[in-house]
Length: 460
Image (cartoon, rainbow, N blue to C red):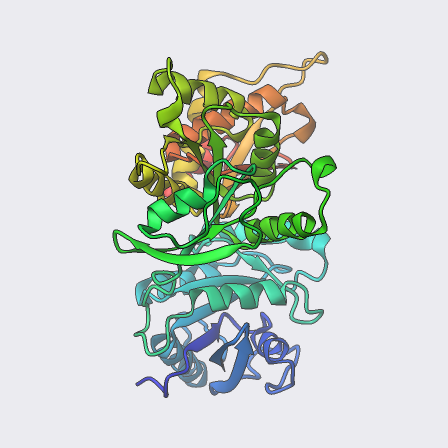
């Protein structure tokens, strides 16, 4: 039975991985006894915790030992399993220093059968340089390991952010989707007088923000909620962005800062350009800023109805070419005054937002990379050395971030990386989102020497 209205977060794992130390670190006091001896914690220990305005109950549990024969160990494990059954979120703690063990694999199977949201926590990562030790826990199939050090406090803030992100709404049943009610925050950016406010009004169906033919009418970033086809959004209208050398007035300076602050708190951005002026150098600068900030993006070519002599396909082709550094991006032809193209723009933003948060399964990802390598092998360098890709994984989303384990990162040519990105984008429909790549050098693993073998192993 649920206790009150406060969500419950259970901390589980095999003995001596640092569960109690993690609880103490999360609540910033010593509520649980911590010893470097397995089996100190037996009963469930509950403690209140608060982060980012959300309150929840942390439950520390004894070590889970699947198949334990000793009666006390079985009872401790039963208490841990009850904690899992009553939890809204489970923190599965593993020991990054020891590495992946068969017991970890058995506990992972138990958690999958319980169908609770699980955050995989790789403890004892005591310095940023040791973070790579957490990657092998991807094999558990429970998502990205969150590297922390309960002893030194490294990564604890990020872990708390992840916990709050997956907590259910107050009163929701265990396993409820915590993100369902979270709106997609969309910032409208562009040069002055390209029609950002008019587009926002057209989407809202009302005059929510002031529109004037004179540039600079919008000064602050205006947030307005919108529900479109059952999906919650927040539209953020912003001031026009000019080149820094042309920002003279103090008011415009602060308006520009607030526009970029709006981008920082947004999930996606709509770059609004004036069809009659084409995509200018300043439009490209704004687009590059959106890309570098890692936000989803759609492009609205506004005032399309005033442009003559061009077909829709030709306008999209030219826009995509001018913004080719973004990768494939939705290009929507709109007329804010006439209301043309606004529905297509919202659908494009939602599609880009989905791509931004997409997580590619490890097996299919490795198969895509394997097929790409088979279709076009990396070229050898002048010394005859050739790039070998052993394994691929996606440790992060928003935007999608991929890690390639290779024999030598220096052998990755820029054009070959772009080729791999095109194949991955096409395979997983990554339109309208930046993609990040990290290369890690390592020796060939004995169990999987190619991405194809790694993909087949991950899919079993």
